[in-house]
Image (cartoon, rainbow, N blue to C red):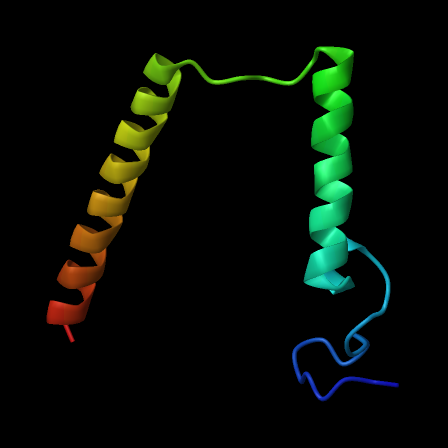
Length: 77
């Protein structure tokens, strides 16, 4: 079953293999199992309130820069 993609004609259509092709509910189940296993093993990272605050700050800065870049690009059109 060949694709209609002119750039990569050998690329096949949707696949039924891999994590991304799974039902979203099944993906959540698998991810949850991994999280539980990591906590039981003691290797899971648990954010402190300071780490969470820093991560949120960085995410806000990245988002703000992205918005500025998008506005600048759209005004040049």
